[in-house]
Length: 254
Image (cartoon, rainbow, N blue to C red; front, side, top):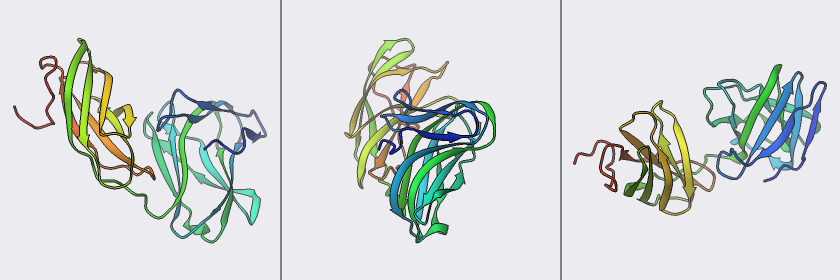
């Protein structure tokens, strides 16, 4: 949902610049990017709402920073009984440069109603750059579908010595599935996002070999309508086998 306020930024110093980034998003589409010279506290108002808070209400934020370290960012929430006064919740530090989720417990404010949601920077950092990929308020547990099964690489085509295209298929998950996310495992332990589909099959036009790896693990996760994630189904693609030979799941012998 686009922000209600586009853009209302207040600061006693240099104002940061909010923008919509279509090139880097958590779940396709776009993300909110804050950039500029951070020399004072900035408050960026995003949404005007009327959201009642219950004992099991949580606020979830997905963020990404250019380098691991402090986000210098808090979520700012104003309630209808004090609509101009923000209560803030610290988003802490990131572990690496990937998307990371922060889940905040709002149970201490049960019985109140949220009037505004925004962001507030903290501390001072000369150059500032952060992306917010998702912001959600929800009650209770998030629905999580079961893992997809039978992930199979139906076909592999060598585009070059270091690039392949893949045809993937799997058996769909149980539960309310919105879409499936497809990733590759990187040699360093992280993951690279390859794409998403609402179907039980996917074409990867370009899987690039990372360094001298001999195989690449492909992972597929089901994502519910509430953006809860299933465990991943996995399959391996060999960089030493013949072109067009279907890959085998990790651990399976020929």
